[in-house]
Image (cartoon, rainbow, N blue to C red; front, side):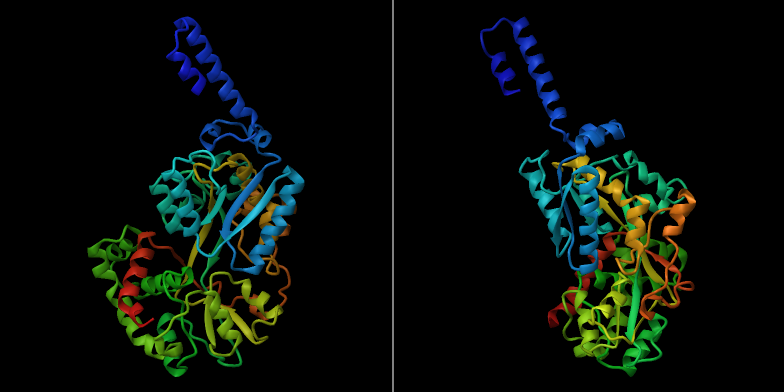
Length: 430
């Protein structure tokens, strides 16, 4: 195109200039198509065969949290599968915080890098999704192109197209389900708390044996959102529903005081008397293993039996869900708007949504992440793959799961508000 622009200012007759410019444009477009990887924006009307043709034999840089050995091993297994099927070289870029990937894409956009981004696929939560969507950092309208997306039955399962209540608009694909799960050492306590109010009573009876991480850690904000929802359960519906709308000064004044009151009463009985909070949720498991804590929680229930098998947790560990509800969500993966290997990323995501990959991921010994596929969309043979197998350890059997109502994630804005105000209120002691 630079050649065509230069010719427009030369002395070449205009008809010839137009022919040369048109020819240059055609060559430029064809070159883009024949590279085997087109920009995400150009593939909106592409057939799946086109995507497969352009996506094979490429690299894919998958930016995903790298703090769990089980998840990391599962991604390694996925890498072997897509290498065999599509000659794709999958690189797991391990993140300590998803905001790292968001910042990278935002920096690339600011620098004018709109086609060769270093992030091909990112595992994000609702808060980061809302931020990336707001700044137009995600490729739009690509999820419906995936043949396996129909297996989630999105027409009858609206949760597959909403992230923290925000419509995904085809910008991210569901990957798995998770719920807040508590676990404890049954030798240290035989009667763990079953509700948030019972937790307050239990902590006073067992001072120093429970804590939670420091916001904005994901597990920390998850616990605080669970508490916020439960503590406001007696409020009128019109007020409770404000949790699922962008946080305003008025809604904060209506909903947050009861949370701060609860924490003010709870903190003096926490580990180190609530004067110090660990920075990562992973440290909870270490403190249980060291015998400092008797009760903790996670968003990845399968990590408990796996940690027992690795002798990181005592054999007396048990898992359960609170009777007053479990904060639950669907986690998603997205392609940035400027991904250098967008078509290859689509092939990867389609595999991640395959019955084979979803069944493998759901195995407690692998990850234990609940599948997003609808059983009604699977063949009889495929349905067998998802039948619960014999559990390897009692902690893999989650007590109270059937009677623990699922609590939907509040609007993403509440995570930022809670973290900011928590740090202002309690962070000074850190």
